[in-house]
Image (cartoon, rainbow, N blue to C red):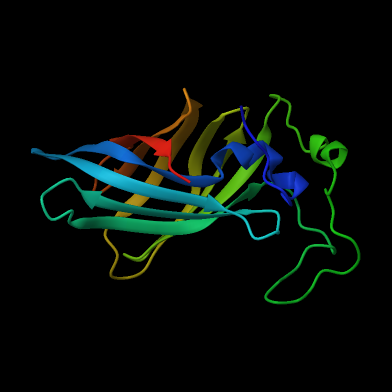
Length: 198
């Protein structure tokens, strides 16, 4: 059963099953030319909200070795995809004008797409100079995402596209991530199974 946190903005109800801290293990498996990189890793993901209609996201991973060697981190924001209105804050720190839109379940239902789910946008930043914008859909306890844009700093490693799949299965968060990087076409990269710890 999914419990809705008190004070949850109505727009976050379709994503509410993600809220919390998840931890577990996964497998990295990626072939680059003749080299095949395989590693087991640990991961801690946090989804939270601060009263605004988006989720805060943080992920930290480490290699499952004796030292728990840090691997990568990423952070970002997840929200339902819709045009922003005068009632929404921004750009910058400008406050919204008038009431906030989509504050009731009935109003959020008008955002449901033709497939019965909700379109979503995810913005992620990696400390290695890569920023990604994903578009996708949440439909029940399943999320499908594909990159709409990938931006890299001059010193970042080559990375051009990705897809991600998230699902709630037997109270565990399962995810899979395919990437196109280092001259490779889109292919399997990593997956994990995480349990809710908070």
